[in-house]
Image (tube, rainbow over all chains, first blue to last red; front, top):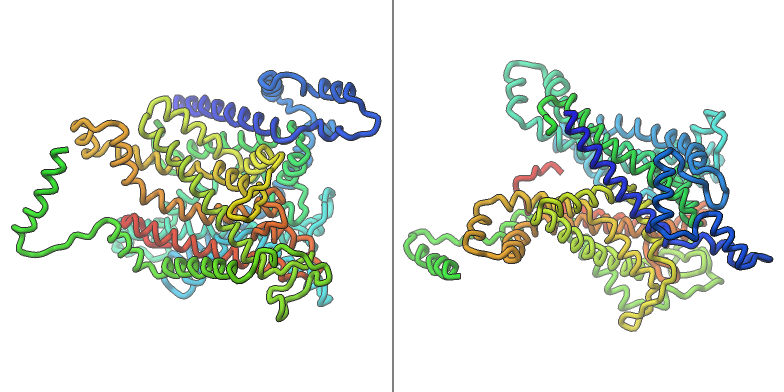
Length: 319
Length: 321
């Protein structure tokens, strides 16, 4: 067990090294941060060189990378090129907002997919199952902006035109004190995220539940006279839910990165937007900081999920 | 080589001896049989054929200039007889743009999948075939790429490749060079799952007796790889490629929606959505309803077909979907 965990941790460090190196290389050549100063009035080439020097941009790339890595290992992700604010401060401003949005969505996603997946597996090939399956197939094939625009058209544009109480299409809310206002802003983006994710998850749960329901021990459970309820909840669902927990668990760290498209449609100032805004300006420290944070979360969460899995399912042995 | 000749000779001999005439089906015939029975897969296939015919006939009838020329006197017109899907913010006909946008979106999807499959098969195949440290390094790299949220990786790569973009002229038509970049970006960010599937499939194939038999007959590494491992992995590759096509078209839509993809006036379904976004609150619903419906139709059809193919290639897989 401990040898397994330590081997995985060493692999994780290696993976993070690859990730940071690739990202550093790509971001470095993706835009020239100095181009911002190119046509400024009264700025000479010497001034630009001085700025580049103060930002450390005049040094060779490997040196820049290892300097950055060294600081990052000490918990310092550097400062933004343009706002000169520490990257960690910028992230700490956005992270709560992303967690509020994604966390709320995730709770609904898990609950609804559990219900829909179970119902459509138990009532396989019934009218209800067919409806759920078709909708999840359509939802699975939909770009999120289709749902987002549709909901905005109805609940924001049309409701406003009809004089009904309408939902906001999005505004930058930094002030989270007003819970009701926050909730009103969250309704539409959360609904979009839920529709997209539930489609995939419920189909997954349905097929894993159907697989379990076909096994011999379920027939045994029925044969010894257990009620359908007990068979389903105590016997079948318990095993069917294991792979479901795994995929949900593996997706959770990705929540940290926010939902870029949803956040930009609804002007939600989360991590996705932070990344997007700074990536457009070529602000590498922020971009690399966000990448390092989200991908470390993914890498370490994978290990945690694997280890926790042995407790949920004692049949699994780590080696 | 002599073994093969003998094997071929022995088949007619066997046939002559047996009293019952029995035509064995080839693997591809078996796949087609199972695919045919999958009703939704046929619906998906028909959907794709209809859409492709629509785009091909459309681009024969409608000249490209009709899709890209703006007419500022007729901006933001709701659907009517002359513009059945309405016009966009610069007076371009939405219907015509859907035809030409469809061409580009499908082309990007197809070429990105070709790139994805090539990279995925080579990396997965090499990892499985060489094993050892080659496997370790390639798989850690694959894992690393999977750990970066995919849109973040797409953005970084798109910015990396997209500084100065030349225009490309193919078959007398001018494309914004961004088309090529989007293809490369999608291909480079989507091969990871395929590589893993190819690797695990080849790893299990490698241990099979017929591979040892081939090896003991003196077959070279290359021969084993191309005549045994690749053909037996083809089914899985075809299925992943089909499902990959759906996600490539979807990714194109997202990338263009963020303004990183193909630049106007070249239309794609994704950048039509981006333009529609700003006119959303003005009630210009036709600008987004039509392109996004086409995106949904194409992706739904491809997904249905991919599902059918998966069941057809792998009869052991459960038919629950």
